[in-house]
Length: 338
Image (cartoon, rainbow, N blue to C red; front, side):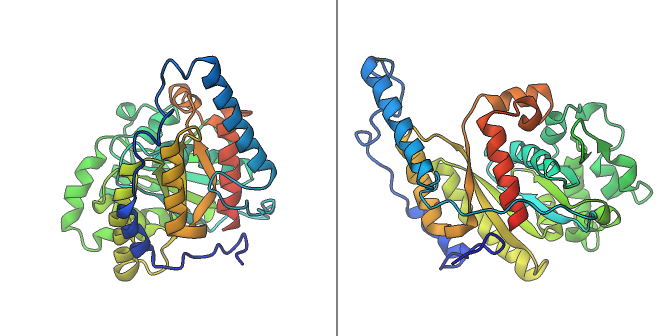
């Protein structure tokens, strides 16, 4: 039986489990009746069906059954820290774009800070979405993570910026970082560059969350080499499943050749829509393949997340009483417990 501090591992290897996801079957259109908006959806019968689904989900939650279909594990209150550091490095990684990596990095970081943890967010994507999501315009920056990586005269402390969230700092990025992938090829120990950059500030933080770019290139390998764990945001959609096997294969290669301590901290289901059969099918297959590695916390689709990007702050401060804020607070507790 698993404990909050030591989640049970899946029976098969992560690689074989991920590979089995390619065998997922998709229901026929008839079985998906009701997934797409129609005139019937807005009719009285459609509203009654929606209320019935919501009631059923509420009943399951009262019985201790979460969206993953498993009994919810008891997660203890995060302990109060007497001092900060050394930091655990978590890479937020998935080579598929648009699965919620940046959103999860920002909101998990803010939720960890609410638990009394000091957090450094590392924008390791040349698009600079993490920086934008925290209200910083990448094109206006004179120095970014690129300068720290490529110029020995630039210290990481010169580039780290405070954010609007207490306890959360940012190592920003912009399009300059795209050149680093090419320039690092000729460097000795190029896969360990980010680890070298982070070492001077590891004792100042409890968590370092690295927002990876949507690829499995040298920058992502750098993040995996520096990381203690990987959090894989996985959109509850069929095409997201098909890319997991390649990602797991890359993680296992980094474990074997560069970073033996690297482990998968958890798989985070994002953009979940409990009203659709497709989301439920994908969720069931992910839980079947990965077992307790899948977080109990599930991030539902909501219009609140795009709003927070415009506002330049996390959902925990923009809409603190929303379901999205509650979900990321629950995720933070799971991450701390693991």
